[in-house]
Length: 449
Image (cartoon, rainbow, N blue to C red; front, side, top):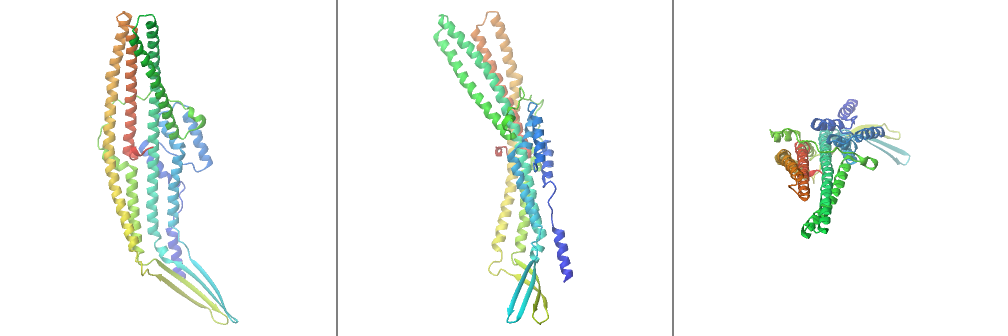
């Protein structure tokens, strides 16, 4: 009997899983760093929170870049910190699955006249002990899936912060150029008003200049609101409030890369790197193990081994053992097994769907990436230089008294409009570049907030 107990104790200790020092967060850090070169931080103590706060202040002391905006988001976004708790819950379930429920003790005291009977028993859940290794494998798979989801959410937030940064920077540039358009329109409208008052300008031409000025004023109000909204989206992504909202942005968007990225075998790269695909695979593996556990326990759902020690007044003590085996006569586990099988097949199809979506999203986002690159390059190399050349010629004609001041102002407005269009094209390229990175590493860009 002692040997049997020793075997039970050894099996129990061998199957136990303890909590990791980092809660499994190291896997998330490595996955994120390997893909975007930045490390997130899980704030689990006041000291870690203070360290993060100091680092965020250092990053905000300089004008933001796309990389620093993403880094602040990974360090400081409270929604991301809350999502890491799901990983902690999964690890707690894993540790719980590796622990045996322990023995059950019972004690009874019975009297018959002057006789007293004492019954003492201890029962061991043998089936629960035997199934610990399989249960642990199931929960370990779910824990790994939770790690993949946490890493995916981290990557999506970093890419969301990058997109918000480019949108906010483009909006600020747009406001500056629209203010120049407004100044030109205001000067043109004022000059037209004075010339019309002197009788040197038709009322129709004056009205046209005046309505252009009025429309420009309305457009400036819209782009200013766009700027506010873009900065707020960036602030939310970085988790900022209070004085931190005064962060500074650079003067202009980054230049286009010298050459566009080649397509290569991006689909294979996405299947190898995308965390949503990896997470779906791990979940399917965990469900396969869970289905195996359901099949093992379908005919026997209780197996207990008990030791007894009974004593009565003036009689020798009774000692013995008992095995309790519960067979579900009216439920052989068919429903549980069928449910597990359907969950498994559902997960298999989701893995296939995630792979199909990954391939499709990579093709779509790369097409957008190349289109926006070519368009921005066309504006930079063709349209903007031509506009500059036209403006120089127009200024020469004005200085030679071959063009009127209104023609000069109109040309100035057209030039600023072309520059604005180039800013938008450059912004669209960097947004498309971020979407391509998301499609290769994290998941669907459309799933981002």
